[in-house]
Amino acid sequence: QVQLVESGGGLVQAGGSLRLSCVASGRAFSDRALGWFRQPPGKEREFVAGIERAGGTYYADSVKGRFTISRDNAKNTVSLQMNSLNPEDTAIYFCARTRRVAFYATYDYLSNQESYDTWGQGTQVTVSS
Image (cartoon, rainbow, N blue to C red; front, side, top):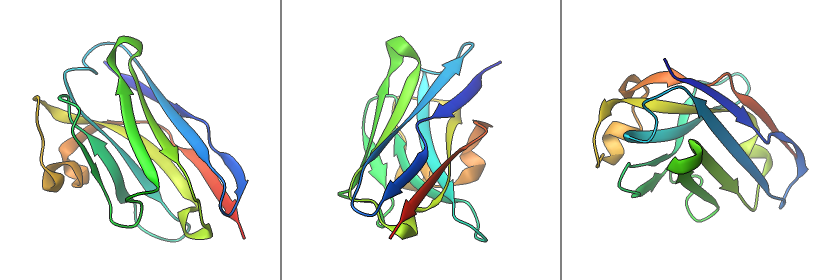
């Protein structure tokens, strides 16, 4: 069984940067796509970014050009580098593992929460204006 643990959240001023990390314990992490989601205050959880096993990346329009997702399979880690943060990025950020073992994935698959079977507990990111 895989467990995911996020870290790196915190309070940052608008325009600043944060790097989130998600470490997996257990097996079955490097053989499939991974993703980051976020849940802003009072809103539904939404897709942020996803990365294929093959390394291809996908982003929500709201973060494209500012956020970068990456993975290090040797360290069982997926990261999210967040630059040019604004108050609208304030949310709890979750990493997640997809259900399907595959090299490739589509945006529609990665952006669908039903595609994921394992979630971290979340880390809070707060951006002040």
